[in-house]
View 1 (cartoon, one colour):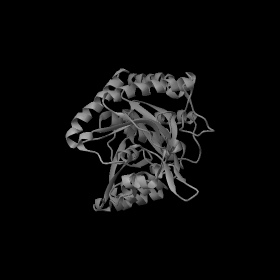
View 2: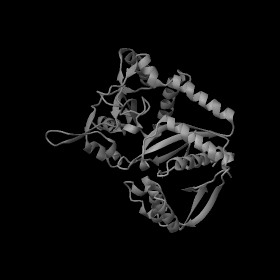
View 3: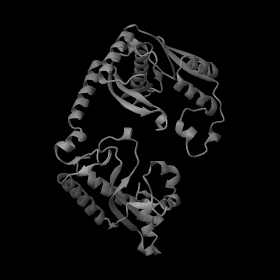
View 4: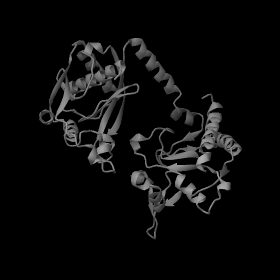
Length: 372
C-alpha cells in the first residue's frame, strides 16, 4: 500500500470513529481506499443529508487533534467474533465467520456460481484489528501512527450501496471522502471536481438539447432528441467508413433471442440474473439481448465457408440491454440500454495478427480524430 493509500485508509477509520461518536448505534460494513479517496458503508438508524457530512467532519477534526494512535492487535478469530458480537457489529461478524470458514471475505468467491470450495482449505486462526480511540475495526492495515498524521481531508458525498453488492442484502449508507498530504493538493483536487461538475454530461445533455431521461420511460434509458440523433448518426457514419475500408460488411439482428442461444454460448450461467426476461403467451422463454456475439455467430453458421472466403467481417451498430441495479445507474456512463458499434471477425488462425492490427487501426483513427 502506498503512502497516500495508507493515509486515506487511516482517514476512513477516523471517519468511522467520528460516526461512532455521533451515532453510537451505527453498524459498520467495509471501508476501503479507492482511486481518489475512500469510503465506508454503514447502517444507521436515520438517513443522512449533506449537512450531516459537515457534522461528521467537525467530529473528525476533534478526534484528529487528540492525536489518537492506531493501535494494532492480533487475536484469535473466535475471540474477534465474540468481540464484534458483543459490540453488535453484525457485518464484521459475518466477515469474520467467512474468514474462519473459507479463508476469504470475497463474496464472489464464496457465493459465486462456480464451486470454489477447494480453494478454501486453509483456515485462518489469527486476525488483526486496529483500535482508534474507542473505535475498533477488523483490518489488516497498514495505518499512519496517529490521527494527527492525517493532515487534511474532506467528506465528499453520500450514496447507497447493498451490503457486499447483493441486492438481496440491506442497503447501507456509503460515505465518500478523500485525504491528501497537504492542503494545496486537497484544494487542487476539489477545484478539479468543481470544474468537472460544470462539464457533467448529465447536465450538458439536456442543456444542449441532446438527450433526456424520462421517468415514464424508465431510468437508465436515454431518449435522443433530433439534435442528439444528428451527432449519433455522424459518429456512426464515421465509424462505418473506417470499417468499410477494412472490409467489414453490415448486418442486422433482432433485439430478442431465445435463452437457448445464450445457453449454447455459455453466457446464460454467468449472466442470466442480469438480463431482461420475456415469456411469450405460448410459454417460450426469450431475453432482450445483452450482447451481439451469439447472434453474429448464427449469421456465420448459416452456411459452410471455404477457407478462401475468410475472413468474414460483420459490423452492426445496435442496442444491447442489461438489467442494472438502480443504484448503479449514472447518466450515460451506466445505463440499461447501450448502443454498441459492434463487430466480429471469423478468420483463419494465420489471419488473426493482421485482423488485430486492422481493428487497432480503426480504433486509433476514430479516437485520434477526437484528440485521444
